[in-house]
Image 1 (cartoon, one colour):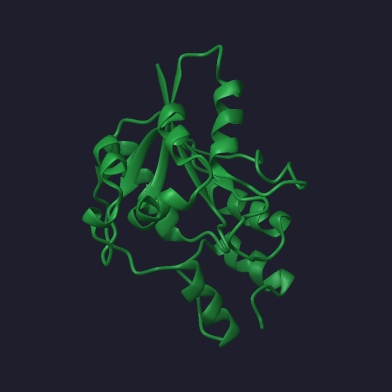
Image 2 (tube, helix red, strand yellow):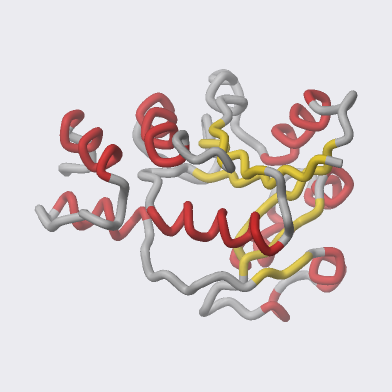
Length: 194
């Protein structure tokens, strides 16, 4: 049985904490690989173009044999990117293989899950893996969701895409927060300057 972790996000930009968290989850749960899925058209967030985010994700995660970057949401430019739809597509893709999907989300997402499209169906399509994050209380999540989820502790890294974008717009360094390749891509394309 193959076990694939699904790690979705805007990755605006992808940073080292994404890699560290993903690899920690992979090792703790003995997953075969982590599939990073940059959101195509996220319903609740605005960001730079999907093409830029996909390119940076490939630079950030593409050289690790335990990681894969999927274009499954980027390819669908017509519709909003809902996690339940993405999981349905992945289930179909792997239906003739012995593959189990593990959706990796943060504690903040578990708390917000009742606002997602078809949240109950997510638990039918994948095991829900929740990253414990400081500042979020597990008891704030819906009880039935809490009971079905698997909680994982990972290193607490105070790195966020928002912080990186702010540093760039203020002319501050981002070395060691993002990979060298991502830093070069951001510079070359003049991203996050304003």
